Image (cartoon, rainbow, N blue to C red; front, side):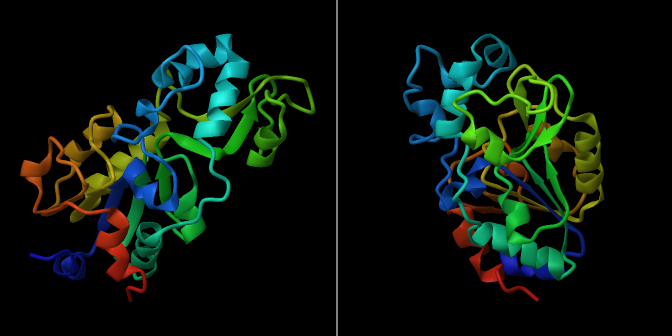
Length: 240
């Protein structure tokens, strides 16, 4: 069965994606050979430690130095994968995008139902009064952003290591995946839990795995595609 045949026959698709969805937009992933975790951090800490809650609290300046250099890409544009998923949603095929990404590119491409498991760099909030701020406040800070109302420290609305996922978003993702007849998983190694465990709630008939490297769930897939996800989904950019 081809991907086109699976999509044409499906009535309720959910897409579950990771960092590989955005690499074709110039945003590096984490675990590949050229990924963020393989690059020098510029300080005497591992990247995983830098993007942790405790590091944010104890070394806020170093956190923001790294965060702004490595996790924010304000000029990135949606690629074929983002555009194809938005087209499938408009055509009534796709019910939701569940993403581990924090770049906001799915929404920029036109997707309406996006469940961001790890938050978004586009949203930020004061840790004291909870006032919200856009990305421009983070980019303009030198280097640590503070609230213009109360002077509190501003934190990105992203889930750092040591922080729990948003329970309401996880519940919504579980509901969407459980109700789907087809699950397309793309650009994720499926090793980061609890997010990766979402694949276990799927009860539909077709699982499509699109990833350049093998995953531990390949044996469960109806179809496995070993190519960049933008290339795999390019034919659906104008779907419907």
